[in-house]
Image (cartoon, rainbow, N blue to C red; front, side, top):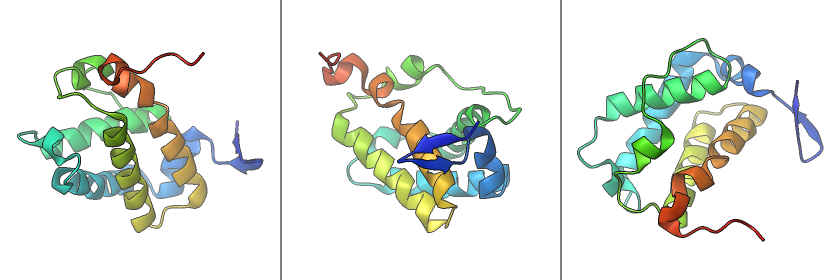
Length: 139
């Protein structure tokens, strides 16, 4: 079923992998994205001492599975993956999200696929920030 975003029919999550050119293309985008994350002045410290290649593969598994690929996610749960890190603040999340958007656009992915991927990524904001950022439930 297609998603509706700003009154336009968008690619469904299941179509994203096909629209961007398959898992190899997704891995290429994620490699570029993680290169930026590791080097970024605002969020790079979260990745110091981490295995970039492993993180890319886990992100590929996590995202591709959500987009309908028959792939096994071998990573940790969201709390287990982010819990041991220094506090992740809203600005950190926003910077990471912006770097993802820039990577998606640098690779000239179809606009509808970009919008679906970014909406999916943004849906994890509360889970990633959790209580560490002192977020409260909306009134």
